[in-house]
Length: 351
Ligand code: SAM
Ligand code: FES
Image 1 (cartoon, rainbow, N blue to C red):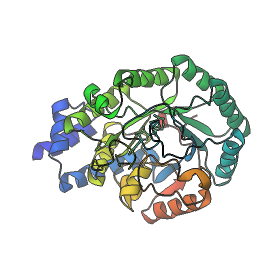
Image 2: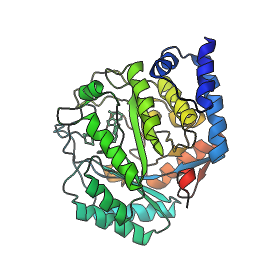
Image 3: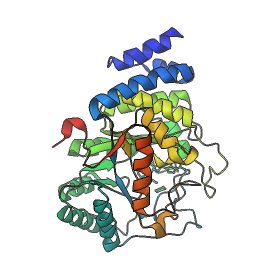
Image 4: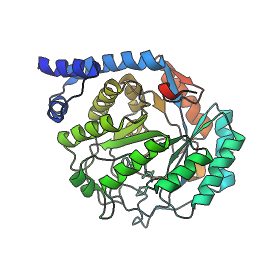
């Protein structure tokens, strides 16, 4: 098994792994190898970020969506989802509360909801920028045209999150209805990066039908794209979707993938996701100890939290923003890290 340790050393030395090498690492991992990986991942995390964990205030502003992704609780076909949209005033109020709590990044996330026209979205971005010029705005609103992305960037958005979900075309087809394609998704990511957004991709760990070979393709795609952020979390079933009875992803494999990502692209902004915290009460802490350096506490009004239900048993749906913020800094402090109060840009691009 020594060659697996050699592969981790090779990764650390910034060498590219082949698809076969990725598969070997993922298939043959054990807890000792993970320990070796996490120790190295923490070394790089400390080198670039010290013990500081960046916080992003997440505003889930609409759960209407025209898409029908098989895994997603707010997919169009879910007739039982209670739909909501925040008004611009409500979004601004979330930012106001978030700013007071020390957040300097606001993440606007939602389904692909045509009610929010290009003009409305640009208006919201401009208003936030005008009120909080020292804050970064991250958008996570799905696939759009190049022109739309360009205009949102010009309006002041700094970052964009769009997970590629899976880099394998056939596996993408297993997770999405016809009409959505991995080629289109990847093209959007290239567009975003070309425009100048700090760009985030990512994937679910343990999504139905996923194999080590698919994960290897994810790593190859991420290496090629060289994004600034990568969001990964376990797949968790939602009771009103076609995947209701599929098994959820594991904490163990998610952590291993986080460690690999930290070593492969050491400056990455890498969140310890809510999904990880949902399947393990200490999931986010474990994510940080595996190399993650971002947390995204919820700033959405408590009244809508439960309605943005992507998967079952999502945590933090009952808390006020301030409680989430306090709870996270306590948790992070207990493991020797601190919550940073700044924009937390990608190291090379920091203004
Ligand atoms: N509509 C935007 C988009 O497609 O990028 C943003 C919202 S979408 C709900 C955000 C992410 O949630 C997706 O990229 C997906 O990876 C994740 N997600 C959706 N359903 C999930 C599930 N059942 N388990 C874990 N993650 C899920
Ligand atoms: Fe659109 Fe999930 S199907 S956000």
